[in-house]
Image (cartoon, rainbow, N blue to C red; front, side, top):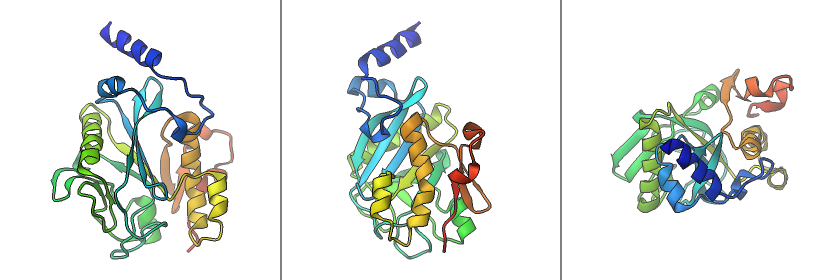
Length: 240
């Protein structure tokens, strides 16, 4: 009975957000509801150009914005990490579990994002120990203030200890709108960035994390959900 009352309160307290609106336009939940969502499944989006990390929590059948946090620092500018020592911060789709959490990192607290993932390995990329961490210092990682990192870490840790098998992290160079892709159309990374857009678009429209797999060196998105649509529209690989 208490759970039913809690869920009813959540829906009554939160403004409705159309499923056709951008996920970034969602209104952050109230502080009271945010505290009650500790332990709910979590999803993270990172936008380099906007220097923003967005933390989402599952409420009902969709994910709602818990907080947007300013990134203190990341290194290497826009574009994916390709090799050890290039000082780039990764872009792409990653997943973490309890083994990736470092509560006593020398950079306060840290979450190892799991670079390289299957896509990175298929491209021959190298590197390791790429983190989201505190202390506002970065050489290839995403550095946050200690206060922000404490909150992010707490929600990820609680979600995993409460039964979420893995927390997905989507890292983009910028908000993957058609206008932004057009603005960066001359970049050597354009083909790679275009390949990330279906994941961004799916979350923006459905308010659910995309299911991302790697097949033949390509990101493939939500094949079971896409159904009869042409899978090739949702699978891309980087042109080297």
